[in-house]
Figure 1 (cartoon, one colour):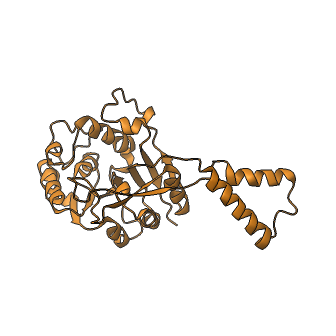
Figure 2 (cartoon, rainbow, N blue to C red):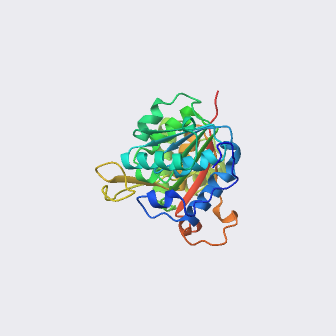
Length: 282
């Protein structure tokens, strides 16, 4: 592939990435993920400095370079993945001075990045294998990239009615005993306060982080020896975006023109979600 060629799409069919993956890799799935999450945001790659967190065998580093990124840094903790990424990118014809694969823990690496150090940061498929969701989002907010593209498995949304009612009782107690209460509020104001606390909406979300174990020795599993991982629901992801000053939009996979959902059922069913968040640099 010419180093000057900018592709509007990347085709993984028959590529080295199918053989180098230590988990099942499917070209149809990789092609659609690249089309939606990379080609769909081409302006966030062409001429940009890109960071790929948990870069695996370099597959999305390759996609970023093919879309005109001036430089791509991949962060990966597994030595065999690092070797595969370097070999795959060299085989893909990319100039060696345009990419680097770093051996590091991604959370610790993020802490070393200066604000504005990257234009675009990718986090594909790894967040659900971590337990440091707050740390990751805090660092993304601090770095404030032009685009943070997140693709992850998510926990189910739940109304959590009893938790919401309990939260309302606690809030009411605090307002009444410590914050002056709602003595001067109208009936409508009191009802609205109850609705804000109890009914799901932008002002009343319940963020859930479900901790569970996986086999740390299994291919594609967490790099943490304990095997502990965390699945966030969509509300928590978006609450963290808001908290750390990141504007965001959720990618609507059903609006992408997918005509064959085989190998993409997790996106169709909402078990896996994608976002593009953007930082604000003061």
